[in-house]
Amino acid sequence: MNIILFGPPGAGKGTQAKYLVKKLENIQISTGDMLRDEIKKESEIGKRIISYMNDGKFVDDEIVNKIIKKIIFDPKKKDKLIFDGYPRTLEQAKNLDLWLSESEQKIDFIFFLNVKKDIIIQRIKKRKIIEKRSDDELDIILKRYDTYMETTKPVLEYYSSKPNFTEFDGSLKIDEITSKINNFLKV
Ligand code: AMP
Image (tube, rainbow, N blue to C red):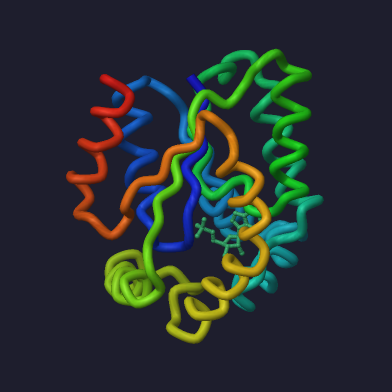
């Protein structure tokens, strides 16, 4: 089963992805984590990534798509994909459709975790203390939210008309969201 977790930064996509990975024995595809790994490696590409990230901007589609393509065409990962933070642009969503069909896969469910800006800010401020992410400073959070709203709106429009799209209230507590997702999936 392939699932997309969709929603603004701080919506809880990563947290819910981890539960789904355990439950379904799937693999979490977090582009944010993968990009942070590149930064840790101090590679040339990592240096480009950090400048986008610390500016609250999306990383270039070219870099992100390269990472994702490799995963989609990996036979060991086939039909085990939990996308967390991808796709974020319409171009990425269209590329994903193309690569999934080329690899004879489909998206079974798109889960939209909808959360308002004030709750997101509170959550990310808390996460900053625990995880110490360099892009969790308040001004960067606000930029990330604005970038999300601008760039991701067409993606939301693209997915929301599909029959496999479901919206969840992302402002609920973590376990409440998890149980709503579990009930929905009947797992
Ligand atoms: P996240 O961990 O999902 O909140 O992502 C952290 C940052 O990584 C984002 O603010 C972007 O700069 C970058 N990023 C993650 N996923 C993507 C993506 N699919 N496309 C472009 N940039 C991304």
